[in-house]
Image 1 (cartoon, rainbow, N blue to C red):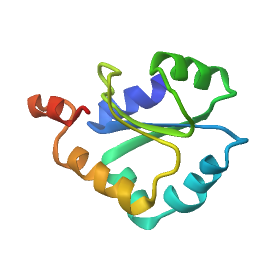
Image 2: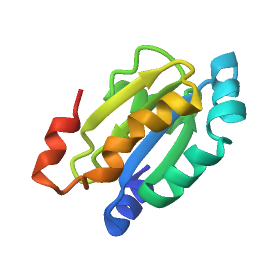
Image 3: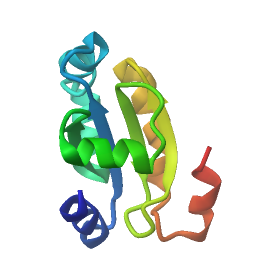
Image 4: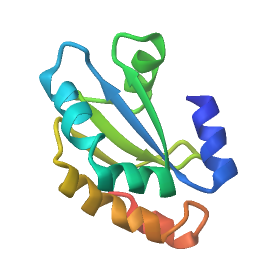
Length: 120
């Protein structure tokens, strides 16, 4: 996670954190339908650094506690400098809906003073 934060800072990109559960069907759907979608892959490649972990991993448990995660899977857009969560989505989200929610983050960098308005 720390390496992903540093990489996001270095590349001037937002950090996307995805915590999944290997026993949760929505986690498998995210991998199959959302993360494999061409538009999502292009957006992530161009504007984000993606960090994925499982809830059963030590780091996954730490992140769930730190970000007060209530359900799985969860996708968070995180400010890579402060670690602050800007937006979060629980359970399965369709690729088209996630892409629509990612668009504002492609238009404003985390170091832009206007970035605070992206927090929800």
